[in-house]
Image (cartoon, rainbow, N blue to C red; front, side, top):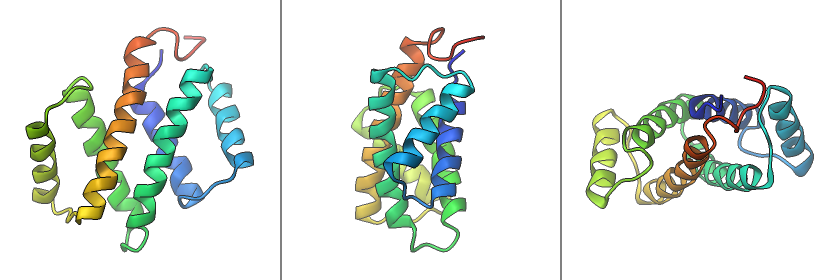
Length: 143
């Protein structure tokens, strides 16, 4: 079965390993490895995963100057995943503002630039989450 959390975790590990930078060859290797563990890498899946990766890459770049970028990325990744799941991929502007406030309350100081990239990241995660909902039984084969 396609697991939203597993996909985000695999992606985050790849991002950390690549330090937010990759070329086409390493991207194709990542996709092949995902296929080996059972993900069906069709055109729609690849396109939405690519958009997600582009958003995370931008977000990673602005956090790179932060000490302990991996720790910050892990915290934000977990918060984003929980938010998207809790809201079933649909939220209002007030939900967004509450989400930002909750991050600040957890000690994550967000600049305007970070908030902008975080918005893009959230939308990209939502599209990947949408794949997991619509392809619940067919996104990962062999299970």
